[in-house]
Amino acid sequence: MIYLDYAATTQPSEATMDVMKETMLHYPGNPSSLHEPGIKARKRYNEIKKRLAGLTNTHWKTLCFTATATEAINTIIKGTFFKHPEKTILTSTIEHSATINALEFVKRQGGHVVEIPVDNEGFLMIKELKKALNDYDVSLLTLIYANNEIGTIQDIDIIKPLLKIHDVPLHLDMVQAPAHEIIDFEALDIDYASFSAHKFFGPRGIGFLYVRSPERFTPLLHGGKQEHGMRAGTENLAAIAGMWHALEETWEHIEDNERTIKKNARYFLDALSAKGIDYRLNGPDLGTRRLNNVLNIGFKHIDNHELGFALNDEGIHVSTGSACQSEKILPSHVLKAIGTDEAYLHGSIRFSFSEKEDEQTFEKTANVLKRLIESGDYEK
Amino acid sequence: MAKKILIQQDDQTLYKGKMVNMPVKMEAIKEKSVELFDDEEPCIIHQSYCMKHFAETLSALFEQSGTDVIHLEDHEETLDFLDVDTTKNTVIKLLGGKK
Image 1 (tube, rainbow over the protein chains, first blue to last red):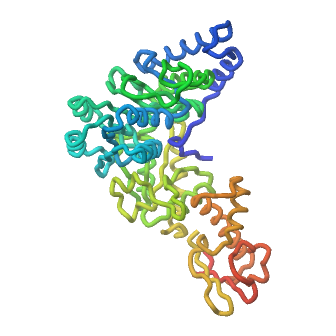
Image 2: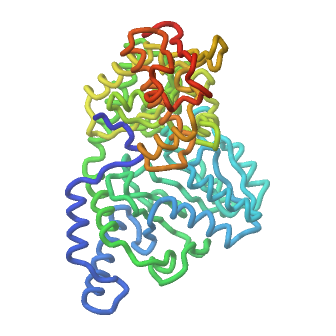
Image 3: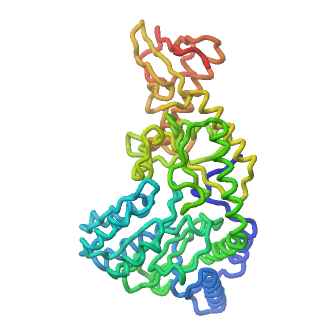
């Protein structure tokens, strides 16, 4: 099996699973309970949160555990709207569905949302952002930092000063980032960021939110006083422990891993070119502001869906990024937003990988692609 | 699966196009979806995955028969997913020959 869908999910290491099992076995108490098992669980929870805060260079009380990144994103978007319903929320045209649909909810409640377009590599158009900041009373800019489909990494150093002029907080959907770069919140200097453990070899069902400005949003979930009042609900201690361990493991060799990933990305593209396959890399070129492990490749006049099914039959697992809308399969909104050529739009496939893959993996994948494409069976 | 077929009944064309788009009973798609996904209300993407399976069944039948023409009456059970009024005098022709 060749798994090239790491941007969808990753598998935790055995060591991470062991940490989770050990936590479930030895810390069964509710961290809110004032008896020995509860106090022991609370201590463990605090220890882990402080370690996670140490890894990400922030105070531990700025971190809020959530069930998913979708919940974290919803918390900030809806929480900002509930706090400032009269103000405008800004976003981009290449967001994840968690953001898109949270903002659709805001619009249905009478909120005002403005989408800032991106250029043909997926970078936010700064001129349009400046205009929106001048035209509207803005409560939030919510932006996908590292795009899950095309890999574009936004240049937030250009964006942040503009927001500061207007006192607008910035929320980054950083879900794809931790597998590839160390997150330093002190250096990042942003207001909010959302994360999901299963994108960096942690378990599913756990994520976290970085919150520098808790006073600027209303919490989504009400109940107990967990997460410093930002998110009610009994803590999932085993998953939290697994997430911390996975992040520590991921960042242990991150520079070496990134070098391997970049080398293999180049190898894959070169192999496709050498085999005479007509393709285009959607998003920025390799080596620029992009995730090097998320390669969205458009194959000319190909039906990506049928090619994706055929690759699956060959034991190669990828993503097409298409969306279903009742009677139709629609091309990705991200590829449309960056103006992907129609000849390549419907034939675009996302290959996402880790440092674990080697050159043979990409050589084999390129060979299978050549055979399938040349068969003529997958033409649009 | 870009193979194209022609479905005719008494020389009248019922369908001409890609195998993956051939007329298939919704009931058959739902049954396949339950088999594959345990979901009786598949979305359009899951429906297309079911259609691929039906196309593979038909494709395999052409391979086994060694011809470019299949009489539906001879394969009623195997091809019962096809949405045609009657199997009588109905033929499926593989266009462009076998690949």
